[in-house]
Amino acid sequence: MTIRIDGGTVVGWSGTHHELIPEGSVLIEGDAISYVGTERAKHADQIIDASGKLICPGFINLHVHSQLNVGDYLITDATKRDYLSANYFVFGAPVKEKAAPPPPESVAIGRRYALFSALKNGATTILDPGGGPGDLGEYVEIVGEIGARVFFSPPYRSHDIFTDAEGRHYYEARPDGGRPALQRAVEFIRKFHGAKNGRLQGILNPAQAETCEPSLLKESAAAAQELGVPIHIHAAGNLRELVEILYRYRKPAIEYLADTGILKPGTILGHTVFIAGHSRMDFPFGDELKLLANSGASVGHCPHKYAKMAIAAESFDRYVGAGVNIGLGTDTYPLDIISEMRYASLISRLVDRKYYGARPDRVFNAATVWGANALGRDDLGRLAPGAKADVVIVDLRTTRYGPMRDPITALVEYGSGADVDTVLVNGEIVIEKGCSTRIDEADLYARADAAARRAWDNWPKRDWAGRSVEEILPPAFPTRQRERGLP
Ligand SMILES: [Zn+2]
Image (cartoon, rainbow, N blue to C red; front, side, top):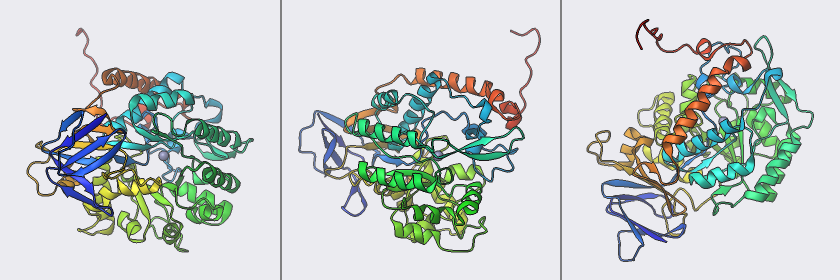
């Protein structure tokens, strides 16, 4: 099968950087790109007319938990005054006695909905650090069905986090040290790495820096090397983690990870906000940013999630300037990688008080080639002969954009995932005219809505104080009571 995308502005690749090709053409043969330029001489089985549109490399979203926003909705739980911005403690630290796995049907819907939502919003490659625990064969089938390129294996850790009856958090060592779960992840990768025409890719997911003991991280680094896959770990994401690692190992998160040998090219650190030099860290020792840059590890930067909690990394530009490879992830809903570029840009400018900061080229690179570098893939995040045929076509002819001079600046300043018109992954059209070519979206949404409502309605059963969602997070406005006598 050959496909030619004609017209529009192509974001091509010079060999070292993106470049614009007005009235361009992209030729796709099988799962790869064979030509990018202005010629239209070669025959193609199908021609996509992209006149007036922007033809981008598929974006790379480095942080999509394959689950619904059930817990994420409660991220700004103001009653958790001791959680020190460890946002996942709100929903990921159950009361031990009440901890029950979610029903398999809800897990499957969460996986399907999150992966599809990220894809529809422009991410052809998705890093999934783990959603609900569930059947792994089914996960692979969902990836096959949705059509995205996904890096995944089930997460593991040596220490769990719980909340006691008074609402206090505590860590508890697992009797098995997390080793059976690591083994399960290794077996998953051995079995499924490369499945679905290469769209399912293995990555090891030791969960969080402070929930993984040094020996588990050493074993993870060795296993990743043997398997030839990258690693993702949440690190320097909150102050609770800093305190835990500092008290246990007498060093901050990045130093801790460096000393285990896990900090190297092919390792991606989710968030990495609270490092030495951050205004909310009282840790005036060492240079974690330099350590990070010298190690060759990458950062998966999720600015929108942190902005919700009144926190910013300091700053996107400072990390880039220090030589750290930085990609973008959404983490929180909406899973919209195009809007995330704008958050990265604006928040970096605010932090640095620098009008001319975090320019569109930088954040576009972060969402494309730098994300690909993080995953060790030079055939993703760029439109060049030999690269995988992962393409996102964005419709710029809307009042949202209006007249423009530079489509990349316009995309970063004005764009959203809702403007995505067509998505190709591995040379297959998976989104066409804004809709899936593979699944019934209305049915998926209805099932996701029902599963989320069920989970929210049952929230008091798992909350340490038995509170409802509305008690934890009051709605913006009260709801008028239904008047008597009306249907
Ligand atoms: Zn995460």
